[in-house]
Image 1 (cartoon, helix red, strand yellow):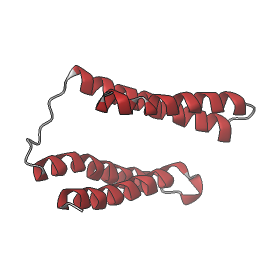
Image 2: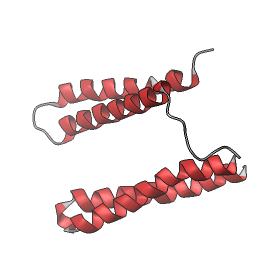
Image 3: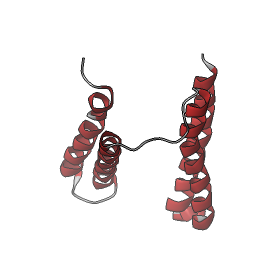
Image 4: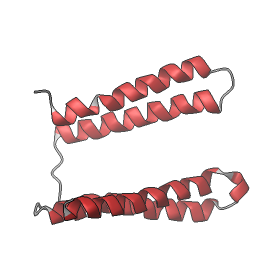
Length: 124
């Protein structure tokens, strides 16, 4: 395993765990830790965002990423897919009587996220 892959693995694991625990702290009223959860989730998000800079630095590329139309489109597609998947999950698990519609919305979100692969990598 290359060194940059290992560092990305470690930082991704730490950032993902911090973000997930922070979200649990925010969203579970039994824990009564909303403010602390926001801080923990923010630290996790910063670690996850730092992966991009660290990875690019280790690969010898400039840290600053140039935003093109394709980059912005990919980001928007990823956000839309994640939101659709999340709303579908909420419809199924939280809101009453919306199971079928929630499954449909969730599948649409999954399809949007799957569209990221050919959008980013291209078809050959």
